Length: 320
View 1 (cartoon, rainbow, N blue to C red):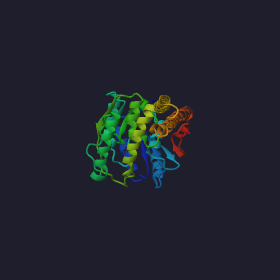
View 2 (view 1 turned 90 degrees about the vertical axis):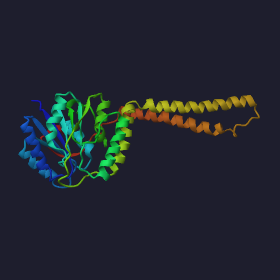
View 3 (view 1 turned 120 degrees about the vertical axis):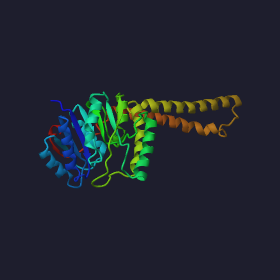
View 4 (view 1 turned 30 degrees about the horizontal axis):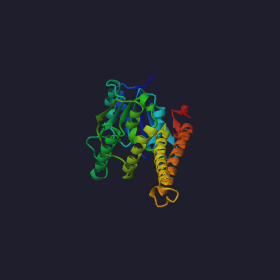
């Protein structure tokens, strides 16, 4: 029987919050009569998180789990969770209890009843530090909105819901978990919505992210814009640049030849700026062209980049 919901939870060193989180999810799903699974991805935790997950899987049949052999990051964890998910609606949330499971019914209804492809949470009222997290986050999201054209207030919110088809149609790698709505848009999913969700103060542990995530996030956004437009056809970009650059160099050479013919054999070219510009410009154009050819070969022969070493699985042995 098709499950109503798959709840995907990446985690890293969150042993204290996991029992409370899973009990809360189970209560909400039971109250709303949702058939569900909870897929927990341990991203190489160094505390006792995996032992806690194993105890929870024995206590709650819905809990399934994957353990990475080392820490890969949130995007690989989400990729593996999406790969394993079987529910009609896939909901992601963080493991630190700052995302409330009480939001699950509303997120589910926006997918199944309102017809959204993807719904992103918006933590309108936040309990993070205003200087180190809130202000940079607002600036970061403002830039995202301008560059991506997706009008979300909190694109990086971990609490999201998706149609199953969406998570099976996109590839999350590197640090691209911040831009899943952008990936979904470029995959052809246009109905992307937003829901104001509760943001809870951190109860256990400390944040795993620092200032560098905003710098990396901006660079990743530029990367995803490039990849989405030219990732499958790099020759269109580099070939165009190469042709245009080479043509400029060729025009300069042609002009120098005309000047030589017009002035006569005694006319020297070494005093002309074009004499020194034309060769490097033509070489640069040729290099752009060669880059395009090499990129085309890489794209057409690239192996799967999402290959991660797993140490142990619970309830998902068929994925091996």
